[in-house]
Length: 348
Ligand SMILES: NC(=O)C1=CN([C@@H]2O[C@H](COP(=O)(O)OP(=O)(O)OC[C@H]3O[C@@H](n4cnc5c(N)ncnc54)[C@H](OP(=O)(O)O)[C@@H]3O)[C@@H](O)[C@H]2O)C=CC1
Ligand SMILES: CC(=O)N[C@@H](CCC(=O)OP(=O)(O)O)C(=O)O
Image (cartoon, rainbow, N blue to C red; front, side, top):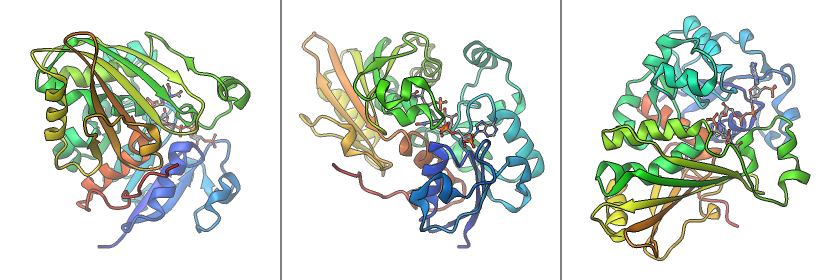
């Protein structure tokens, strides 16, 4: 099969760069265009010296790309900036496949979007068209989609742990507490005071407590699984490491045991190439998935009667963004789903 011609919007950012890292070794992909904002005009090797061995196109402003030449575009732009740019790219090439890693097209309800993102959606038709890109649960829709809204890193980790349990009605969906921790790359490459080494390097900081915009995204998908609207508790934390994410979800059992939860997860993911349910007694840790597209999930009985703890971990730049986007691209082009994604975790 000939290679698919790929463009990456926001290639000077962390998700864009991880898409470059993975696509550069993908057997069916050819990187044709890379865009940036403040870094436009520079070579990729100037912005990311670890790409010294790759002959990559120069970073340009997105308006300078001839989108009609491309088969797919990955989008690693800040939320809010994506919707108009994707609308323009699709106008230039209505057949291009879009893998959006930002949050712009994930929420289905326009009012929920406006409430959490502070403005009316600026490409409502595309918001309606977008397919939520949690690969394991939307495979059929993704295969025939033009625009895939890849889930956020926290929602991917939380939903892979909780959706099968909500679907099987093994947990009380009105009593879910998700305690999440993310490495600092989760906040992007732009300079921010809270991600300076001196401020993030030796401490653990909760943020957006009770107000994080990933809560409605998680609620949307657990609601679909449960068949009813749900409200969850979600508390993210910034932890002193570069990449990796771990979600500890506290759940109330509904006539089930913790072993039943593990069995349900094992059944749900028995044929999934990237989701691994840990054996009883094995606890997921970020080191087990770092740099890889794998997710590890473990279940532990709580000491409190009728409760369990479900722990899930992934790499925010791989299964949490660029890797999942490539997994979805593989589906959209009828390629083997695992193509370019079988790296084993970088441990230690
Ligand atoms: N980091 C993560 O772990 C995850 C991030 N995401 C989402 O993916 C998206 C990208 O995140 P991330 O890579 O971390 O972000 P970065 O801040 O690292 O990169 C942002 C990229 O967008 C470009 N850019 C910024 N503003 C504009 C603009 N107005 N017009 C055109 N290009 C612009 C930047 O260019 P330049 O550098 O030249 O200024 C850069 O290439 C975000 O929506 C983020 O929330 C999703 C899952 C995980
Ligand atoms: C550590 C950190 O700051 N993480 C980011 C999550 C990154 C992400 O997935 O955000 P999107 O929904 O925009 O894709 C945050 O909490 O906003």
